[in-house]
Amino acid sequence: MSGAKPASAEPFLFLLGSLLLFPLSSDPLHRIPAVRMALWPLGWRERTVLRVVSMLFSPILWLTVLLLLLRATVSLAAVFVGAAVAIQVVGAATGRTWHVVRAIRVPRFPGGWGGLVTANVRQMLTVLDPYLALILALGGTLWRLLDRRADPDAFPVLSLLVAVALSTYAQCLFGLDSAAAMARYRLLPLRGWRILLAKDAAFLLVLLFLVLPLSPAHGVAFGLAALAVGRYPALCRPLPQHRWRLTSGRVLYAVPQGVVGCMLGFQATNYGGAPLGAAAAIYLVSLYLGGRVWDRRVRATQA
Image (cartoon, rainbow, N blue to C red):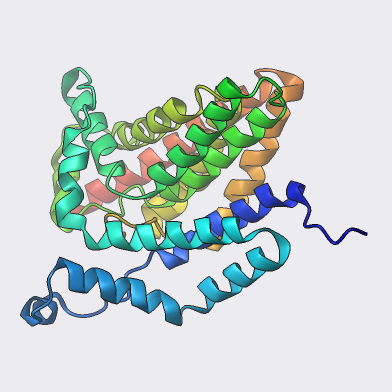
């Protein structure tokens, strides 16, 4: 035994650290009433310092850094800490970073329903999940382009990791919508399945863009499964979300999302398009049932 730390473990530890960024992205100040916060003489810099310093009191941060130092390298631990600090800085700069999303040219899809898709894509870009997935996708794409020895079997796995980074958002498709926005949805002359499809289309378009250089069939199969499993919490048990943070979901639904998505995603290598078709069938069933739930609620409010 040489005592050297195995390099093969670093990707798995990196994934573990990435998943633990979700709880670390929470704002310790969000429980303070907005009226009281407005009275505090705190600028953007002071709020940023408060959020970063609050991380020192998080046992998740210390346990993860200790694990990375023991099982990986100092550089990987430093990357994790830097990512956690960056998330808090971006979260504190909500008002200052909105112009970044407005500068992104989201294509205008035709028709009134297409406008919903465009609006939902923009809404999705105000949480940090797509940017975490972008980092994973960009790293895998650069590896594929620049390293001639890159293992082709690794790209489906990377595509699934990108889909995992986005999967929590499938549980909270309406988490960023206010009560007024939900009322406007109910007033639209659209069936429930079309409103849900606009949300899902935005999710799948972002996912497809990210996994296209890696392995689109594997990533899309996982994404369809994540939407199907996340349909119930998205409609019946929604969690309120905050912009410029990683979305928060429930482990009870995240585990089935990962299990079903990985089963269908990995089988896409062995059985071609059959698992993708199975994922699409499961998704269509969830879309139909979710549309019925939505329409029933709309009729109940109009009665």
